[in-house]
Structure formats: structure tokens, C-alpha cells
Length: 86
Image (cartoon, rainbow, N blue to C red; front, side, top):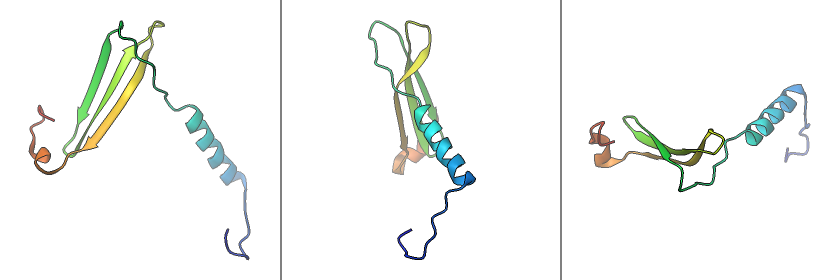
């Protein structure tokens, strides 16, 4: 679009893609505020090269909500850890 002879095109395909992006942004999960009086639930996952964790909590409406997400790639000696240590 920075070239003078470029023709801007916004058709049905572009509009559909734009609508999907808007929907994804508005429906993305948001983090809940933690309540120390409620129990926490920790989910953790690991693969050969990375690990991840999700901290959740059940709110007063009995709905489990995410509080925090964490992930990282394993590097160096960490790649040799057993599954239990990961």
C-alpha cells in the first residue's frame, strides 16, 4: 500500500478475516482476581522441550477461572531432566 500504483482491495474475504480477529479478541479469556479464601487449582504440562502451567480458582458461581498462565522452553541441561522433574 505504500506504492503509488497499489490498488487497495477490501472484499468479502478480508471482511471475514477482520471479523474473526475481532471475535477472537473479544472472546479471549481474561484473568480473574484471586481470592485467598478459595482453593487454588494448578495444572502443569511438560514436553521434551517446554513446560507450561495454569493457575485457576473456582469462583463463587462454581465456575473455574484462570488466574495466571506460565510457559517456558527448556534449555541446556534442563532438556535432560526426567519427566518427573520437568
